Image 1 (tube, rainbow, N blue to C red):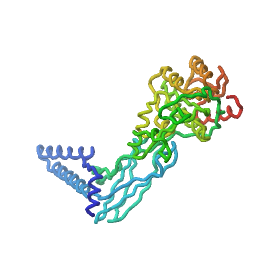
Image 2 (tube, rainbow, N blue to C red):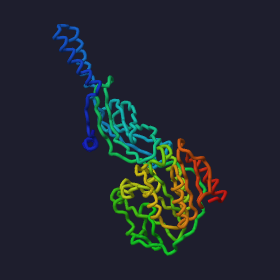
Image 3 (tube, one colour):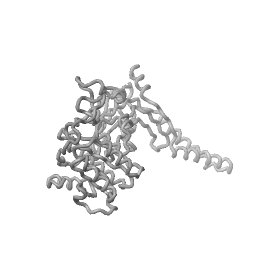
Image 4 (cartoon, rainbow, N blue to C red):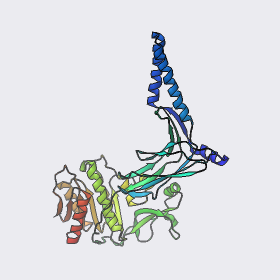
Length: 402
């Protein structure tokens, strides 16, 4: 192995040698067996103890033959959707002058460990392995560490070496095709101004990479420092009708499965509007935007990947978020189980938005007949799943009931 390769190997690897639970039990048994054989005068017991120690020594020797390899991980993209098939690859390079023995490469995706058996790698050669990346759950998944592990055949000893720094995989919620709502009207043509906003833009929408010509005052320095590239805030134009979407996250409104369906339909509504190039504002109840941006979120789908149910069951926070939305355009509220009092308070938003649509996903165990209802001047869609809600939504828009 060249001097530069050895240096890279030392910098990458934090090595760890350990005795497994099985190894510790076997070693303890050997000691007790030997002591019992000496105390009781049974040569057979001491022979068994010596044989066990020989087995332990052989396992340790096998683990000490360590592969000198460099691993690297590659993914086709950093952002995927729930359930989307993604194939990751691991490149194994042997920079040394001797063959690398067989070992196990272990990668981590969130809480899931992916183990790959690697056959011996000849000196100076490279081998590529592929594996299915688990994408069953929405979220910001930590990738890594990617490690090299060497075990003896009986699993008595383990040697591991960390190879790469951690990465991130964003798993976005699924989206369903929706027909966009009518654009609505603008209630405040004057709008408000912001020191960081261009003329006619007042509402923060997302982050994106800097392009020549962007106003330097819109650079988001915290995200720029973390990502290593210039990132700017993007605002929407208040002279154009916007669609405001609010996701209720109160835990008493949903069970965990129903909340996932709510996140999916929220992402679908946002995507249907943004796909037309029209402004859309997303508000997630209880969301801490600074923490979201620090985590690396740069889009509404990133934000929805991190959405969680909140234990604060009071409706004060939700209605506070509604009042902070700029008036005008359409309003879509995605929630779980709704009662008459909540619907009555939502109906007051008709003075600020048109139309107002409430999407209710109460879950299988909560009463509520799926369908479309017109009440209190609003349209309420009740569904058990995001697929049902999407079908009802498209019927609503086609029938003009909104």
